[in-house]
Structure formats: C-alpha cells, structure tokens
Length: 336
Ligand code: 13P
Image (tube, rainbow, N blue to C red; front, side):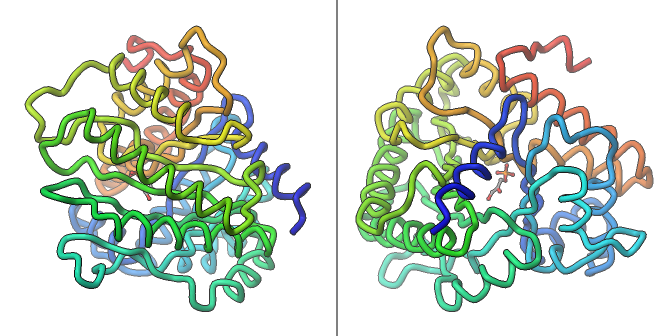
C-alpha cells in the first residue's frame, strides 16, 4: 500500500474550498432521471449530458474530483478526449463507483446489502490504469419498524471495510459511504442513533482489516429527521447534531468528510454545510461535499430544456455556493 499517494490524493480531494461532484449514477438511475425530464435515455444521451457538465468553465476551484460510473469512465468528450484524461488535464481527480448495487439482504425484508467485492481487485487495477485515483462504495441503511437490524449494520460495515482495503492496496482512495436514508417519519434523534451505529461498526471493521484511515474519506448522511417527520427542526439543529455525531463516532485522523445530499433541497445542503463550517470550533477533519442531486438537479432540467450553456451555469452556481460553504462564507442572498 502506497500510504503517501493515498494521503496526498485524499488531502487534495478535500483541499480548501473544494469538494467532489458525484456524477456516478448507475445506468438505471441516470436513465430514470433523463426520462423524468423528457429525454430518451441512451448511452449517448448520458454521455452528452455529462460531458457538457464536465466542460463547464472555471469550476476547478470548487471541484477537486468527479465520481464516474463504469460506462462514463470509458466514454469521451465531444472532441474524442477520454473523460478521465480530460478531467485530469484540468487538475480534477477522476473517481469511480465500484460497488455493483444494493441487493435484498437474505432473511431481512426491506433491508439491503451492497455487493461488488468479487473481482474488485482486478477492476481497481483497471480503473487505476485508466486514471482513477479514488473510488466510492455506497451502503444503504433504511430506518423503519425494527430496522436497521444488527445484520444489516454488520454486513454492510464488513463489506465497506473490505472494499476500502482492496482499493487502498491498488492506490485508490476509498470513499466509505454508509447512507442512512431520509425516507420515513423518524425523528432526528433516531437518525443520530442509527448513524452512530453504522459509523461505529464500519470503523471497527476498518480497524480489523487494516484500513489506513489517513488515506480514506467518509461520505455520510447529515443527521436529519425523516422526510415525513412532522417536526423538521431547524438548520442549526441539523448542523449541530451532525457535528456532534461525527465528532464522537469518526476517527479524528481521517482527512475529510464529504457529505452526500440525499434528497435535501439545493439550498438546505449548502446551508447545513455552511453552518457546520461556520461554527466557532476547529473540526478534526475537513467538512466538504460529494453532492450529486444538490449540484446537478437544476443543471439536468436546463440541459433537457435545450440549453447547454444554462446547464453549465446552473452547475457552476451550485459549485460556487458549496465552495463558499466550505469556509462558512455562503449566505442566502448570494442565491439570487
Ligand atoms: P446525492 O448527493 O444526490 O445524495 O448523491 C450522492 C451520492 O453519490 C449518493 O451515492
């Protein structure tokens, strides 16, 4: 394991003012999103939409890395340059989603285990040779009646740690993503407790499996009430509970935490991050973003309505807003 390379990449991904663009929707998810805005999904429409985003001017100061899907890392920009080479030429690290999706967990109705460990070493070797320098694996934890079960927590924690170890062996910084979903009517304290459980289990497994924490990034949910909870609380409460939970349950030698947006509005995702970074305390790690929808939802709509340029402007705006939130310098009037 090249600890120096892993630490360098991890620190560059969470450098001052920068975060990650998650553009790694699977073909199924991306096709659904295209259909929802009236575009016929195909390999070519997925390429055309994403390559237009990647070609946006001047977003390098806000985006340090882009997570790609297997189809996209093999595709090209309009001029024929390979997408990972193009990103690297702009100083942006190409990343790759390496899990193969969340499948039903046997004997546990409604719960999922993320698969993709078989053949992972060989896939990581190939992706590294194509230019990827980091990877992502997403575990999905649902809150509900009697769930998550201990089995759901332990199997996903084990898989996340095995994935992380294999990636590090092959020179890729693993982003460990245990996502506690916002679906449901649970309150914030329940989200806090479940988030703490999956974080504890995951870092315990990482310890057992020798994962090098200074060469790792964590991509967690924020601590939020379920979408259907009658008490949605305040942004300040969400920011404080998230920081409290992470400070207690995440190793302090981790270089950075890159949140997912998880279905929050664009502005909530930015405001929460801004509040956390504006607190009058020094956090042990960088607090940054690895947003998908909160960076691209508006950009997709405008692209579908026919304007490449407006789509790039929508993405550039969200990237800039989140870059400001890295230092607590965002404010709502900048949204106008
Ligand atoms: P969202 O920000 O849309 O939740 O996506 C981030 C991601 O990569 C989920 O795996």
